[in-house]
Picture (cartoon, rainbow, N blue to C red):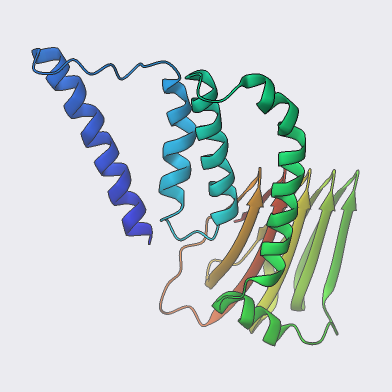
Length: 227
């Protein structure tokens, strides 16, 4: 899926370059700076993001819808006044669908997380509400964690922790951010559901890594990072 995303980005740049070149030679006269052209900076990345396999389908769909609505409004196809009236209820509806989607749609990673997370014995609970949390596991046994952030931030440092062969981390960031710092010799499998937010995984999986960390991330106006 990531290869498909990169291919689509390549095609997009080739098309833009070809149009600019043909316009310069007088072969074509295509106006790439049409009325509302800037909405393509929302539409194109959101569309390509659907094929990158990063699990951020909801966020990309929201971006795609917003981009097209803005484009149609600028082009006079949709009334701006109608958009301004319906914007707030639309946001709430989308967030609601995002939460339902996150809790009901099953996948390989979700099933694995549920099977590993049947018991909460030994699971660390980290809460940050209107505050910051910095938790360091130094040479300690780590079984898993639930990180919940609301208008705050949380950092979980597992660099020197003793991880099980398979470990689960669940993170929820609402108007806040959370970060997990992992050892370099682990693989990470992540399921992310962002709503006006995003998740970033900086760990490169390797075949010789024997430890796997399964991560389920939910971000609403917030962010989550694996480092």
